[in-house]
Image (cartoon, rainbow, N blue to C red):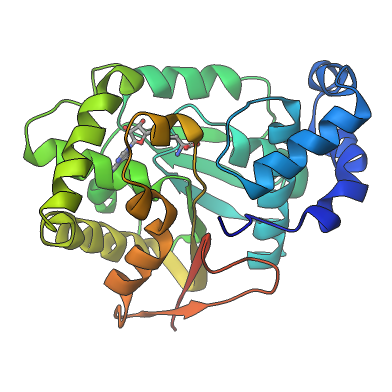
Length: 279
Ligand SMILES: C[S@@+](CC[C@H](N)C(=O)[O-])C[C@H]1O[C@@H](n2cnc3c(N)ncnc32)[C@H](O)[C@@H]1O
């Protein structure tokens, strides 16, 4: 597997980032992990599909997103939209520290996960709002040219899975996402075996991205990142899709009107894709 990131870069700064990006209770949990275990967990997380979930993961992903957002939008007044957050609070937690005067909106369809996100972010001073609808419908909620950054934090796979479920009548909104995951994986296996993924998912995905691109200010950025979970692979997620998701989506987006792809040193294009809205 291509490493997600550079272990030599993060190893020496992990403890400092923990103090910066964790609250005091989370920091206690982090410090309870023996130092050499923190380092081995970090290395495993960066160099293999993610198999364990500890305070080390929280430190790394919050710090990494804070770094990405500061690179994409150095000013303090960041208005960010996350697509398909589920209950993952990584970006609002990062923004609380990197852009405390900004604001965060998530477009998230699954109702139970939205409740979880609101609980996890209740203690933040950052303004947090959730639009409980399909991101494809955002034109009715957000004005054009109003956002600095739109982020898919490990959300491209979720959007594609929801598109494929929707066309087969599988409910992903009122159900438990993890209970539905085996069905999603079965659909993905079939799509890959029959080579129909692009013909079934590309057009709805592109139309969603087009709606989103119009919500960006000129010069605003759309960012998609991805990584692999071992559990999904164990449950049969097609490895050729899970590993190559960003390159596959990049091939769909080639020549996408109104935006250009941009690259940043230290963000491997295998795991990160950045689009900039043209003026
Ligand atoms: C497993 S959670 C996402 C977790 C998060 N991206 C992460 O991996 O850390 C999947 C979420 O994506 C949401 N989702 C998928 N497609 C969506 C869309 N088009 N608009 C809004 N939410 C969407 C689902 O409703 C669900 O809440």
